[in-house]
Length: 75
Image 1 (cartoon, one colour):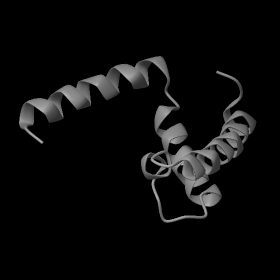
Image 2 (spheres, one colour; image 1 turned 180 degrees about the vertical axis):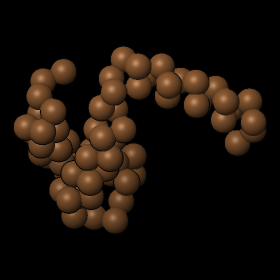
Image 3 (tube, rainbow, N blue to C red; image 1 turned 90 degrees about the vertical axis):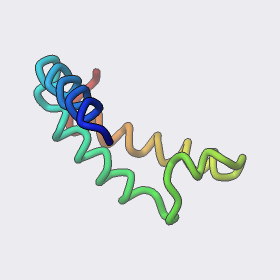
């Protein structure tokens, strides 16, 4: 990653954190819930590459969404 890209990413994250101070906690929790509910060694993008993988990913996403709403509320 170039220095310019790193600076742009840092600035973008600062703006996101101003809008949602919990964004870092949400990202961390989302990652943990994806790991908890994904029984495969595949990433979500890899799962989405096949019909059967997409079906599994849809189920994983439902579970993760429910966990996120339970912890952080709607929106």
